[in-house]
Image (cartoon, rainbow, N blue to C red; front, top):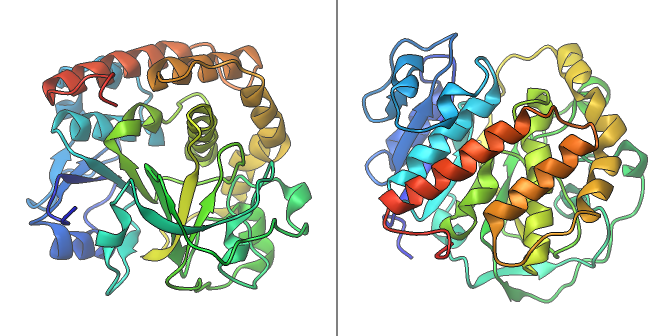
Length: 345
């Protein structure tokens, strides 16, 4: 698949274009569709090479979800996904405004869903994939703290062709970690280059929304929940996605860095406070998802079943289900607009 095939970059931002965004636009602005979703805090305008939607424009879209999503919440990124799906894109590149493409990285290697070559790791309930790319003590945001000192499952030396509709790139300099790691161990990280690791179906490793490729066959799994904190929303989304992929016998590929982060200013103590429910409940959430009976071949229905289970477990508010139903209806409408159907994906 040539890199000029239908690819959409989706970002949410409350500020003017950052150096990271300019790096994307300078490199891919003429090749990829760039969609930027603003929020109540801004920005007021944007670089003309991007398709920018402020709050007024979001409210005028012919979707159900924008009118239901909370303001000043990361879940408004769902609107960008819907716009990308409606445009008929084959791939959505999910990133943030403080993540830039790594100079010289060849993203052509990342967009072959059928024959992505990777080294499989041994099946395990939880996998800290970062440890396959560095000897540093580090773990991804959302990984259980009780397991950070445990050895990782065996990683094969053999390369295999993997079906990889979801591909998470690691990020150099400021990788996606939790507030505890930043408060205690904070340092710049450079991961091993030129390596791909396949996490098998049924294993869980948190992945984020700052460096991930999503193929059109799994677009219903993109939904980011609204009734949890923003520090949990994309990692809990990743657990739902992995549970749904497990039902189809599909795993996740993690790749050496294609991105580097110049991290926006954060209050680490605020991050810590917003992650507490994750530290306490991530294991329980996985158990809840694994206990939920799903149906093969229907990602939209399985997303609904997963979020219903999380609501019934008290992990999300009941209002989440209204948003999920609106998302599923909007995705179906977007796919029809793109001359696809849920059966096609």
